[in-house]
Length: 116
Image (tube, rainbow, N blue to C red):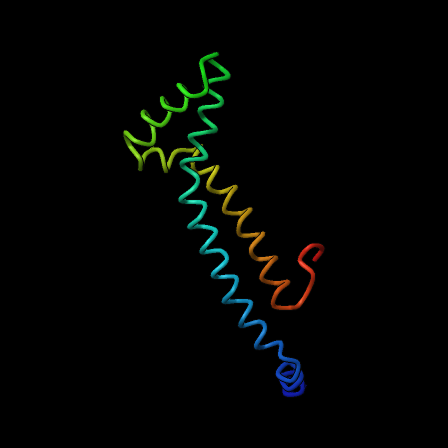
């Protein structure tokens, strides 16, 4: 029975597709981690600036410069591992990773990506 199943899998090309999907998913998630790691500090700076400007009534530009100067430029590593930046990084990584994974799956298994 096991041999018959192996023959059927090889005959349908599922083994090749699953290997192709596996390598595509690894690439998708690595690119999602890289993109979110690079974008998160800047997105966090904008988010924190909007919150500070709204809370204090100051202008958005001055709040943005203050956040940039006091956080990202003064101690980049501390800002990068802060709660706000890690949260932004997590959200963007999961969003990018899920979107890329669905696109790869649909492309490899020849499905419509609009409504998988």
